[in-house]
Length: 84
Image (cartoon, rainbow, N blue to C red):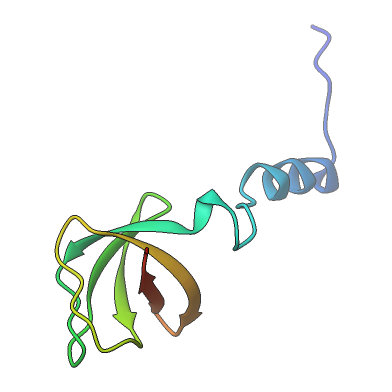
């Protein structure tokens, strides 16, 4: 058999490239609200095929099903804002 062996560095490089996400500011920074986010209470969002806590710095409520823009991450929660 003529199997090609790959070094650990080659495999790591491939794995790293295959899991990179698009930078913020692109279409990839859009999430959907799964549990309502209110000004005083975080909710849940679905972002990049994973469920996260979502918080909004604006004094608005974001209903379930709303699309939001992801701004940044703070701990295990994403800070989001309503799409206008």
